[in-house]
Image (cartoon, helix red, strand yellow):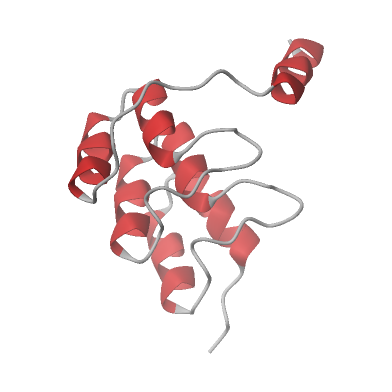
Length: 117
């Protein structure tokens, strides 16, 4: 059996491919790892991609509910509030995470967005 592929799991989570995410999690992929090329956690990425089923699955399988994503500059709760994923925000609260307002995007991220828009 394969040890799983973090990048494939990350992309599957952003695309909402829950079955592929489940495969990689069951194969042992670390759901809290932030790859140096991505600098984002799978949980925050799934939330920002508006994939609540994936986010809830990751939370049920070891994703840390308060682990911030360096690239996005957001915690899972901030991402859930920003995207309006109430069910994810409620689950995070049930796990002990305080509800908070979304933070501003980091300056580097705003600069890149301005470049591409």
